[in-house]
Length: 450
Image (cartoon, rainbow, N blue to C red):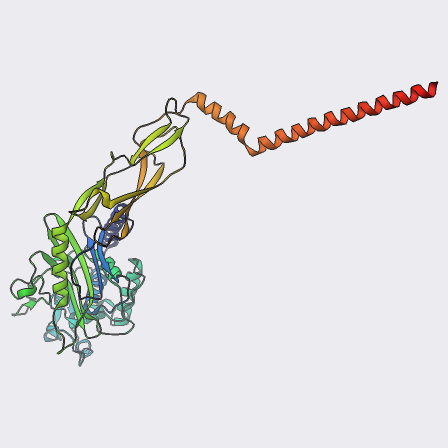
């Protein structure tokens, strides 16, 4: 089994991405674009800060087809001690399970009765999308029980926070109970990218396994300059294709240019064998990448020196207000043509702040919104903590006066004063009544004496 350290490091890598994303963006910004999307579901995320820049039905359950093998890679890698040197038996009984399934194959059956290295099987699974390689890895890790391996896939999905994912097999062959979402597949892929060999293997266009004379060839025309033709996109890298009649065409891929990198998940592009076989995933991916890499850029939306508002302050000698600024720079992916008026800031603060105030201590927060100048839609870009632009000391004299004033204004103080007033009033009234009675008695006694 893989060492615990590898898993811990991988989890920490993913957590870093997630935390970075949550620090920068509180919500998905679905920037307008002119891409005529064919896919039913999509999610596009900037890989540098985890910010979502485009999504469509990202939480809709879809069949993933062979993009399933990204999770198969994860479970296999984490449960095989030595990927490069472990040799795995190739069983005829495993190969027979794929008979009449119209599976994509990687010539693993030619090694029946012999062995293949785990890393060659990973190449065979990821490059030509070999179901034979996926099933062999699942059988090996599951100790002869593929269902056990699938159970491990589902456990890993839960561990990664996938709430709408369930696997029924390691290869992606259609099953009505085998599904995921674009958002969950993004989480799975982000984790896979933290594992050794994954990106290298998933970005390979040709690989020759030991003992083979012919190379494995990628199914991903987007990254294949030799065979991709019109579908080739020079800035794309990796990761996995998938196709069934029920799932349509699916794709997970990345692209980088000019210091910007994006990961893209596409599910449900039109496809039916022999009827509709256009590679709309590659068309959509290239179009979205061109848009993002050309029209979007990282910008400092609000710096730590940008005044956000003036807020009333008390207990500060000689001043009544303080300027508030973001605690940290807010950097976000934005359209290059975004204008100042496209950014709206709404604050959440106490009505009056109380000194002392420190530049290191947040006193409230601000929600930063982007208003799309094409659609007019207002979307949350980020939430930032607000701090005073300078330290402000508390005045001892004003503090004492404030305490006295607070006491005088307090409910119980007012109640006590009212009780005292009523008591005094009652005493005065009672005294007057008593004195009146005493005078009357003295008069009566005087008359009697006559």
